[in-house]
Length: 188
Image (tube, rainbow, N blue to C red):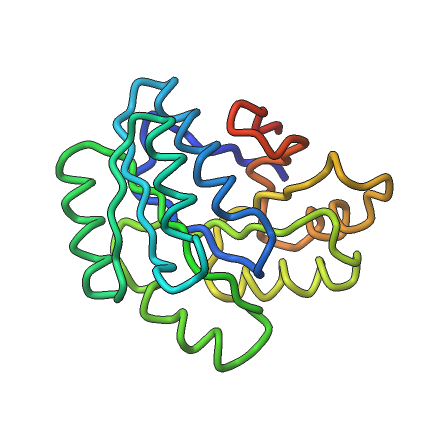
């Protein structure tokens, strides 16, 4: 099932997935598409401890003429989202990577999933083993992801991970990417 994001009406997007799946690049791509749709964008760094995580997101924000905000806790994130929605800006939240199959990681994520107006979008790389991709996508669905973005389709010749993640029940594919560049398309 395909379910692209409605950039004109989306309020807040929380990107989740494993380390290296491409969440930060997807935040920038979604931001670029939202800007093209005439929206103001706030890139929100929830991962404030990862090496260079905030700096990379800031570079993308500068490129998009978007505001960047940091939110270290669920409480601060809820306030940031509420302000962005009130201001009519699309909040795009970049989180730290984690394995959604791990119970401790899922429990730590639970507070973020409870924030009103947030849509959780899972991010999985096409470079992942196909069985791993299916397990990760299923775990993301359990955490409340409403759709999936599959990245790095340009980096693999085998599409098993893409196919297995895309076949996750009740988790439609929002987009597939075949470019690491912000200007690269989000394809349906």
